[in-house]
Amino acid sequence: MPFSDITYSKKMNELKDFSVEETHKTPLIDFNHITGELIISGKSIPENPAKIYEPVMEWVSIYITNPRPVTNLRFNVEYFNTTSSIWFSKIIKALTQINNPDYLLIVHLYVPLEEYDDLNEIDDIRDAFGPITNLFQNTIPGVGLKLYGTNDNSEVVKDTMVLM
Image 1 (cartoon, rainbow, N blue to C red):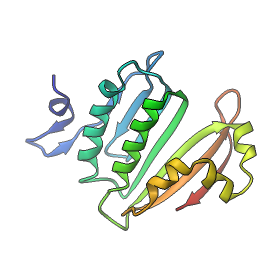
Image 2 (cartoon, one colour):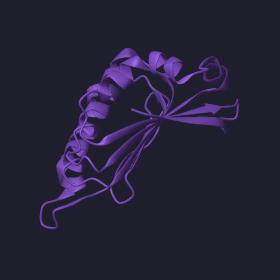
Image 3 (cartoon, helix red, strand yellow):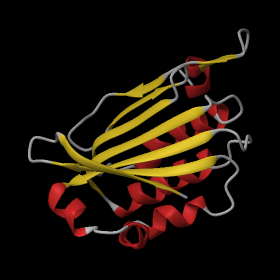
């Protein structure tokens, strides 16, 4: 069944939630239109990234036409390949095009505590995540980056917020 048939009801003009189960090579993807919670979690080393991420981009392109006032994009990806990072950038860039300056996009990044502790100041965070923060240039909604330090059990131990 085509992606658009299962996620978007033209009769009701309503976006449906989008989810993909996690595998040993692909992340859990759980995008909820009602709450504005968009989660990508796990590993992302698919053999054919377009097969996974093109439907995600289609969903996002519909979502940004009627988003929640606060959209939380949560990346808790422990490992990803270069092609996945390109798709992640495309997702973030699309979300920065939400056409309402009163709305907020918060990108949540989860990193091991050791890496988190190496980032001592806001400028260190901006430098370390430059490829992501560069996507926030010329955005319409307000954008924030929330960084979480996680322990060996993937529990959040520390966090900080950076508004762009």
